[in-house]
Image 1 (cartoon, each protein chain N blue to C red):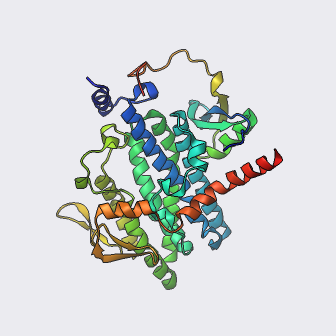
Image 2 (cartoon, one colour; image 1 turned 45 degrees about the horizontal axis):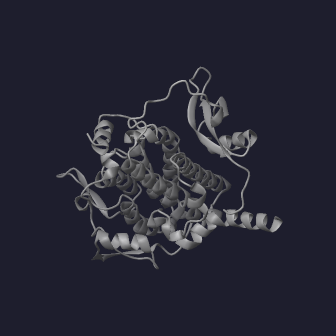
Image 3 (cartoon, each protein chain N blue to C red; image 1 turned 30 degrees about the vertical axis):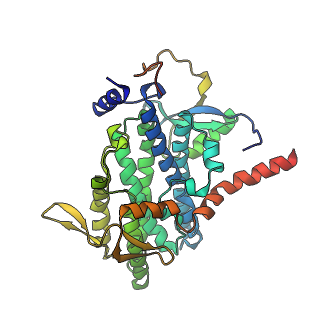
Length: 76
Length: 311
C-alpha cells in the first residue's frame, strides 16, 4: 500500500479459561491503539468463553530471561 | 556438525524451535512456505463458501456458515501473524500478490453450486485441514505454531461436524441425496489431492526432516480416508475408495491421480494422469482464482483509493 496508515503495533494476547486456571499466551494481534487491540483480540480469539482476557503491547514486555538460541548470533 | 544436520537431529529428539536464533536459513524458508500455504488456504476457503451462504435453508444454518467463515479468517490471521514475526511483509502478501501466486488448494478455485456443496466442503475439505493441521499440532517443532493450533484444531472439528450434519440431514430426502452424491463425486478426489504428491515420487521432505509436520503425504491421505470413507458409507453415499483388510489400508478404486474436466467439475476416471500434470493443473489455477483473490483484496484497494483522493 502506498499511503502510510497510522503505525500499528503488536499486542500479545493472554487469557484464562476458568477461575483458578493459568493465564496463557494464546496469540497476537496488530492494532493502531490498545482499544482496537482489545476489539481485535475479542473477535479473533473467541474459541472459548474466557473468564479473563488481556492485551499487552509487546514493546512493554521486559524480558528477564529468554531461551538461548541454538545458533545465537549466527542464526537465520 | 553443520547447522542443518544439528537442527534436524535436535528437532527429531524433541527440541522446540522458539525463535529465529534457533533456525538455519533452510528451516526458516521451509517454515515460511508452510505457513504461507496454510494462511492462503484458510483465507481462500471463504470466497467459495460465500458463493452459496445466502442459500442457507434456515437462519441457524446461515449463522453457523458465517461463524465458520469468521473462524477461517481467524486461522489465516494466525498464520500471517506468525509470518510477520518471521520478517515477512504480510501487507504485500495479502494485497499486492498476483492471484496465481497464492498457494491455496486447487479445490478452492471453484464456485460452489448449491448449499449441499457447502456441507460437503466442510465435511471433506475441512476434514483435510483438520487432518493436516492436527498432524502439525501434534508434531511441529515450531513452538509458536504448535500453540496457535490449539484454537484451530477445536474449530476445524466443529466445521467438519457441521458438514456431516448437513449431509446426514440431506440424505433423508431422495432428491437432496442425489445432490450429496453429485457433490461427493467431484469433491472426494479433490480432497485426496490436498495431501499432495505420492510418497514414492518424493525424494526427501524438508517439512518432515525439520519436523514441521510429522506424517508423510500418503500417511495423511490414509488418515483422512480412515474417517471420510466410513462416514460417507454410513449415510449411503458412494465413494471411490474402500478398506482392504489384507493390507489394512484404504485403497482408491479409480486411477489416482486422473484428469479433471474443470468446466463440468467432473473427474475423467478413464483417463489416468501423472502428478507432474496435476502440479501443472494446480499452477495454471482453477476458474475463479482471479475473482476470489480480487474479492479478498478489493476492500483494501478501495480504501487506499479513497485515502489517495482525500490527500
